Image (cartoon, rainbow, N blue to C red; front, side, top):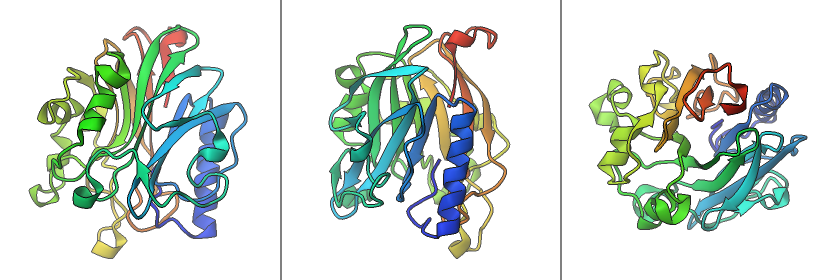
Length: 276
């Protein structure tokens, strides 16, 4: 869910809250909130982890976690775990003016926040590392701390579940270029060492970004938003793009859902299937 920080109207914010409410009612295991900068009551049965990046404006990332499906083992680096009141924006409507959890140098690439935590999938006992956030545009360099966090030092060699805005490829290459850059390609480009990835968004006919009203393109044109599973034998399936923009603001992304099969087995094996 990426409404963008320009989602400021009361009506648009309420539509986003309603959308998130529908996700929680349907039992969605993980819900990533990227650049959601307004209040959201804590959904019943959900805990959270989150963080922010920036030197002048904290770019927020929060992941809602269904406690019937997952327990949070540990946050990575400065990711805040469990204390909903400490999540950026969600309780007070105000966020930090700065934050250390940056994928790239904010002075060069702008604020590109991430949050990461090791989770235990309760039905299977399997641990995974979940990373949500925004990558820089046009192959922008990543900070060593981010590479450390998604590598063995932070994620301990566990399967990596990314719920991210990749900003894949460069705009001057045209919209279709983003469709041709998979999460595996992105990892290889940054020497991330996360190996093969299941990234069904590149096969989707539906782009996700953006509601570029100010640029004269209110329709989505770029395949930026991904739910991908790397360093794992599991699969991501049923990747779906919401038909409409929810808040309706400039630069909003279309929201997505997917099913993650942690062991790569049949979807009938429900203990290993997670809706995100």
